Length: 259
Image 1: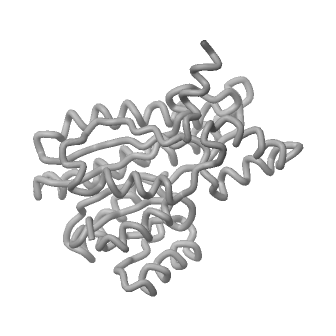
Image 2 (image 1 turned 90 degrees about the vertical axis):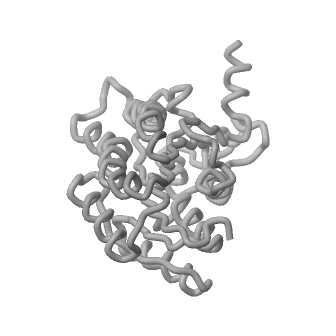
């Protein structure tokens, strides 16, 4: 029960990493606010938590909207009275290079993947500052470290999240708030499977992707949820401003090949 008595908001908690984290946090005692734009998937996550004896509340949210992010924080405070953990996980993918990406796609990716974190952190900070405690986790990606040809907007947003995490950690440390960043490699989620499906040979794309990971497999949502749990818990009380790679060795292997 490492999160016993805590209240956690998790965005994109209707599926994938967000759902795995919501289930894991709830099993460790947290009351979880499930923020997702898909009401059906959010309700499924909520039902699983409640069936397991946990506490959860779904709040349908489009995180690209500043107003909806503020409403999410307000509703969470109204229901639970505090916010101990904000896990910014929601994201969309983009498979366009710089030369061909449209204004609309660029704006959408940056709004969902990056600006949402500004909106939510800004809205949550007054409550966390008042209680002189809190944990903010931001999901980035190894693409924000090494780049990703053909995924310009996605990789750019993920790189900016790393810098946002470091900057915010310095801004709020004196208020007792910790901020850290998680950088997964390929995680076997619906979003990743959709990117494979968009290629001429999805099975080959998947196999080639797995080869980039020296541990010989894709990550699972539970792998990332376990890391998030540690960083959200009091066991990580002296950790802030960090960028934590969880990639099956993919980043190291890429650097070795480049050398």
